[in-house]
Image (cartoon, rainbow, N blue to C red; front, side, top):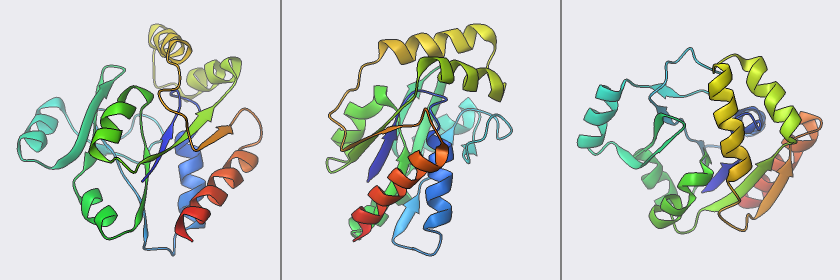
Length: 179
């Protein structure tokens, strides 16, 4: 399992989208759709939206392989990831730096790809996407500044420059994982 870690607004979803397009014909590669207690219309991430009540019910029914909370939202990885990984296949996940310890407990072979971005660029991206209020953006920026990397990542990608450069680095890394 390849887990992208980085602050909100670092471009993880954009990079995952580029990799998804590159590897569309590779069934041994799963791009995991997270379940999030956020509306489907909010933001660019391809996710399954659930209310808190629906999330609780799914949790009670054992439909998640892993859950965590961050930024006032709850996140879950669907259970089907387990069979995919058990079959020796590769999964790509948009993770959370704060949840890395739990991710490694549940998936000990998970590998981290840290996405970094200049703080000024990060602030511009968060404002531009229009998903959060000014206080929420400030909280996300403070969280980004306060969280140190929880792991020695296998790869660090600086996504402050052209997305093509960062995307190519992720695509090359995933390609090596499939070889």
